[in-house]
Length: 137
Image (tube, rainbow, N blue to C red; front, side, top):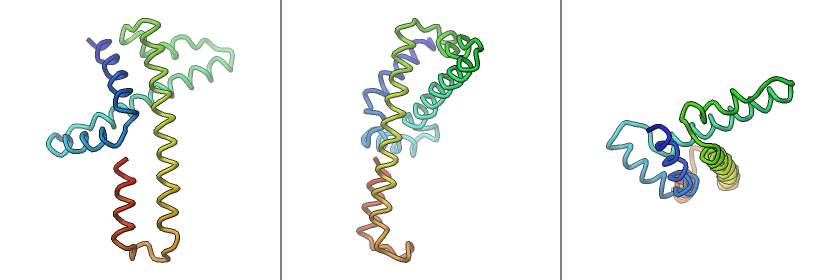
């Protein structure tokens, strides 16, 4: 059951274009009706966890210690095949990278929008709307 859930999650995350605007908006709408975490938040934290486990395994390997238990923790718990686990790690890395790039882009765009104004509390409504649109991505 968990194996199917993880595979569905990996495919769903890829289909959601790594937390694209439509996915976030639909998740936010469902979150208003349901207090559970939106899917995009769940997948974001899960993919961070996958990446950190891989990084910890790399660190163990660099120290000359066995890394297989750390590297394959999720694979073994979810009873994934090598191919399924490789897909999960690949999707997690791809989505983490895309999320980081989008975050950097959004921060840069926000700084550029706010830069001409000395008082951030007195931003014009048009600028506030543009910032809100960036946050929705």
